[in-house]
Length: 110
Length: 115
Image (cartoon, rainbow over all chains, first blue to last red; front, side, top):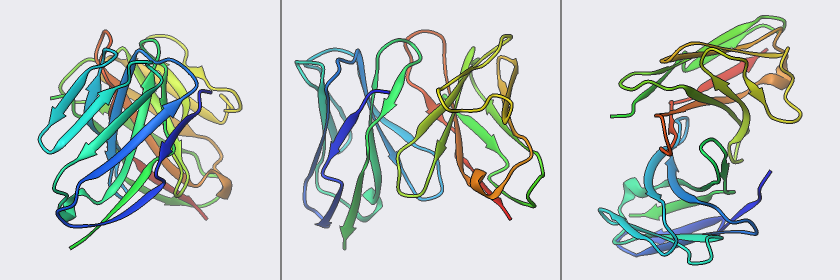
């Protein structure tokens, strides 16, 4: 399958700080998605990106679809304790083919 | 909208038992559903794509006779782990998407523990 590398693997930040994580691939994707997974639960969709260069926000979250279509980043501003979790990027080629990144584990220290 | 319900959320059973997991799309019709497996501290790995009214498509290395998938309606897909053994213990997650280029929405997962 496709390999999507996410960095960093984990982050420890102070409440109120901004967070930035990214996802890179050697392959081109038509859609980039960002999900958040809490322990023992399924991933929840945060942001979907459908066009190269697209910049989309969802509250304190902002994500961009890279111009090369091989990367994407997610920023979280003014982090709060409930932002704790694992963030996964996912790239999609056709209607079905969804490939997940390796995940970024975020810990927010109050 | 786009709510996916998975049941049960947690199963503990003896080795050799078959376990059925249900995945339902509650407020939309899903011609395609997906089954993933996730080991601790790892990412999601696609096991199979479930197509309503036809056979599922399995990923390489996934035994179709071990993991039986049925997608009998536009809102329900089931995964049956047959003759489960301890190595089948994992977190199984389903997803579904609406028709067209729509994102996948995930259920809350089923934690399967085989003793």
